[in-house]
Each structure stands twice: as structure tokens, then as C-alpha cells.
Image 1 (cartoon, helix red, strand yellow):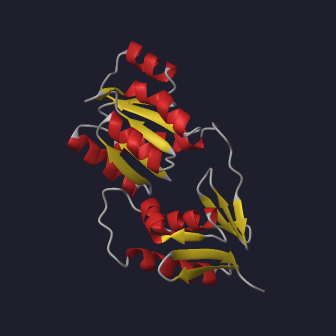
Image 2 (cartoon, helix red, strand yellow):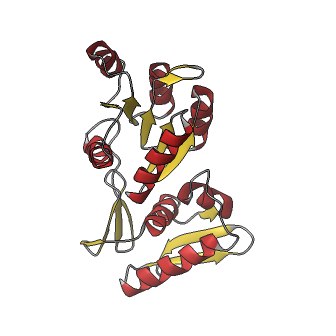
Length: 225
């Protein structure tokens, strides 16, 4: 799952991003409302972690724009504004949760997971290719009806490829979707993740194949019988 953190305090943004990343999520950072809107136009985020006091306005003003651009997106406000009136205004504006600073890292991650389990927006059916079923809502993979554990990169890659099954997925798009915006990506990093995922799928008899399309990217198809 991909999360957008909107926080202008550099050290706080670094701390939150580290906690969220170590919990297994891809996290991008924005420090202003303008930067957040630009990021929302590029990526289909699952959750926003939104500060209120930003250099170009109150984070509340982003809520309606975010929901119009990405229906069903969840929003958790993380802010030092802890008065009851502030909490009520944030929740009534459309936030799914409201966490005040300071907070414990364990609580943040627990609230993120609870927020993502909460029903809302359009429920997406699982994508099924070969023996693999990918539950987009819960970010879970089943092979032959049994749950499978993949690491974060492998999970994001499989999700991206299955969403484009039988179509070529461009290298640039895959890199954008499985790495954070601030990460330095080595030239062969994507190829390494593809190689690991191929081995996993072959071991699990997933009945799907990942083909290299020279000069373009990768193509996921059901295995020929």
C-alpha cells in the first residue's frame, strides 16, 4: 500500500516516514498542500497522513480535493491541534481518524492499519490470474487458495503487474509504483525484484509468468498449458 505524508516539519516527517516504511508501506512525502495535490495527480494513494498547519494553508482544505481526485482514499490527520473543537472540525470535514502529537509509534501504525480495514469508497474485487488471487482492498495474495507472504517490493511489483495483466508494464511506471519518490533507485534494482518474484511464483506453482519485453518493461500472463 502507498501512503502520502503531508508534513512540513522536516524531522517529524523523517520520523513518521521511517515508522511507516518499516511497517511495510511505501511512503512519499510532501511539505505543502500544493506538493500534495501534485503527488495525488501522479499516484493512487491508499491513505493520506495529513498535518493541519502547513505553509500554504490548513490541511482540512485538501480533503475535498483529495476525495474528488481519489474516491475512497482514507485520510488520517496527524497534528498538534488537540483541542476538542479542532478534532471535531477535522472529523466533520471528512477525516477518517485524527491523531494528535506527540504520539507513540505503535499507536500510529495500529491506527493506520485500522483505517485501512475500514470500509469506504468502491470495493475492488480481487484480481485473479492463473492460480493467483490478489486482494487489492487488503493487500493480500493467495495462491491456490492459500495465503502467501511476499516482501514489500515483491508485493508492490506483483500488484502492479497483475493490474496490467496481458499488457506491457513500462519500467518507468513500475519503478514509480514500487519505490518512494525520495528513494535512490539503482539501475538494476527493478530487475532484481523481478528475478526474486519469478522464483517465488515458480516455487508456488502460481501458473503465471513474467516476461521481459526488451527496451520496454515486463508482461505478466497466465502460464501456457
